[in-house]
Length: 310
Image: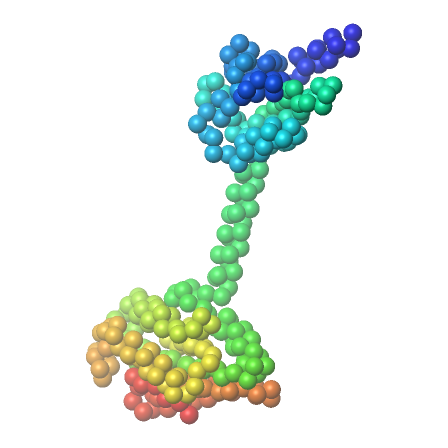
C-alpha cells in the first residue's frame, strides 16, 4: 500500500523526477516521471538508458555542470540551476537537486533528481539586476553631474573647493607643498564678440582638454573655476618645477593655434598666476588662492600669454 502511494506521488508530481543508475558507466537515466516528459518535450523511451547531458545541448560551458559532476563522483547531494533545452530547442532554467541512494552496504547505487522549471523566477531576477544596474548607472551619472563641468567635462568649482580643503589638510599634516595655478583665457570677451559664443564654447573645451592632459601626478587635477577661468591643483612640486610646468601649460594652449585676431600673437592664449606653498599646521587654505589670484592679475598686467608667481 505504501509503495502504491509513493508511486502515485511520483507519477502525479508537478516537478520532474528522475532516477539514474550509478552502477552503470555514464550514470544513465532509468526512470523519468510524466512531469519531466512535459517539461523537456522528450518521451520516456527517448531519454532513458542515456545520460541526461543532452538537455544542455551544446551549452556545456556552465560552471554548475562541474558541481554536478563532482557531486556524483563523491556520492553527495547538490543543488544547481542550469540552462536546459527542450526537444524543440527552447531554453528553460532548470533548478536541479540530486541526492544519492545507498544500498545496505553504504554504496551509492542511484541518484534521484528533482527538476523544477524556474524560468519565470530567473527572468524576474534578471530584470531586477538590469534595473539595479540602470539605477547604479544613473546614480554614477548624477554624481558625475555634481562634480563635472557641463561644458568642458573637467571638474567644476564645487569639486575644486572641496578638494582644496582636503588637500590642504593633508599637506598640513605631512608638511608637503601644494601648487595652485589660476588660469584665465586672454581677451576671451572679444573672442566671443568676434567669433560667436558657440566658437567660444568650442575654444574653452579645447583649452580645458589641453590643461587636463598636462598632469604629472595622479593626484593633480584641473577644474573650471568659472567662465573662462580654470584652476589646477598639484602637490609635491618645488617652485622651479612649478614654473616649468605652468610655462608648459601656456605653450600647450599656444600649440592649439586657435585663431584670435584681437590677440597680439594672432592666436588664443592664457595667462597664469601660480602659488607654491609648503603648509604648516597654522596655515589657512585660502593662502594659495589669494597669492595665485594676485599673481594672475600681475601676469595680465605684464602683457598676458605668460605665467607669474609672487
